[in-house]
Image 1 (cartoon, one colour):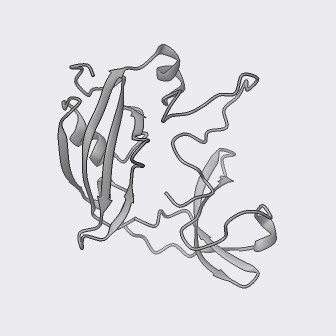
Image 2 (image 1 turned 90 degrees about the vertical axis):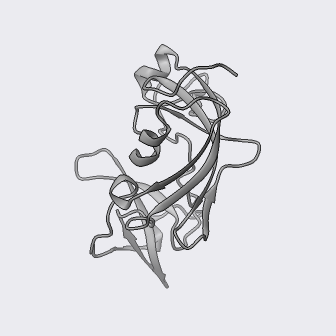
Image 3 (image 1 turned 120 degrees about the horizontal axis):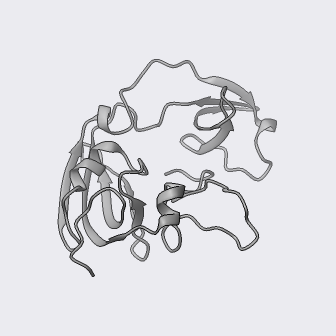
Length: 183
């Protein structure tokens, strides 16, 4: 492990546990696969990213992130109703599952399933953790310089990051997460 300090342009690997203020576990990194992200590229929630700046590999962290620096404040957004047939036939259709849809500007936009009612699926652009204070506890595993390619693409390549197939000339933009699974 290097003595590199977390700053913009560094690739950072962390193990973490995410809980809500009541202590309920919401997410955690896999034991054999830390979360790896490009610092300064908005790959993680802003409050956690700023709290990690200046730290080094081997350090532990305990960070409370207010909703405004996490997934945003909870808003009253009326869910959009879609037919089940609009989703891939093998897709997991349950509350909290994330998908990408084409936004009004033509760019991919994340949506989450809010409710399933028979053949109707209610979706929202609001993250399920909007309005929740996020409590992260973890350890910084590694800090390294990002490659020029990682910097230009805005995400990590290789283990724990984004993977490009040999014949893939574009991006599938399935970075550190699987859009068919709950984060």
